[in-house]
Length: 297
Image (cartoon, rainbow, N blue to C red; front, side, top):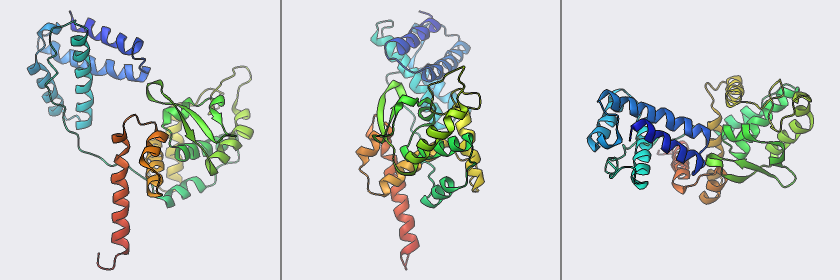
């Protein structure tokens, strides 16, 4: 079978049987297209001609071209997924990627704001306009409920169970979870829904989205990123990213004594090992407190 056809079969499997999101499918398409182009340069077009040495050579080529370890790992993971699928379905006799080791990527601690920075960010004066109420609500919800930016943009009106203090979130892979919302985040979202959203809504083109743009359409991830960056700059923080608010949410919960399993559930992590990164952040916080407070440190 031609490699191009094998890739199409794999992508169809991910889309139809595994129900992967379009963003995930787009990522696999890009990564496997790059893999196919590399093999084409080596004169390989059929899946039966691919060897373990070819896959190792692809990994080496990615490293030589200066890709970050995490990127190399991500691309090799796509390649391994393809060959695992082909072997499992009996499309090819063997899996040449089975014994190719995954590269180890250095553990990078996430960027986290201090509680003082969070208070300055969320306590700044926002314009008393529909857009101002919206922007404040976005920042409060990202930090107050620990949402991914895509989850924030994907919120619909009927996902806001504010009387119960919950948001219904559609996370990665179409998985749903319930995220708590309370305090200033609940107040800011309620104010926006009661007063700001109706001004942004377009009666001629109704939209179920919570966060709307000036034309009444659903706000994009790029727009949310711009809103967060602008709010960060207002208090002297450069290049503030929405994910930093999610990291800060998890870290501050852990520092406050929240259970790691509860944080895992709130973040929507399928594996506890993903959440455990925040235990390292927490230890860093403890060390900083020690160095600051101990007279002989």
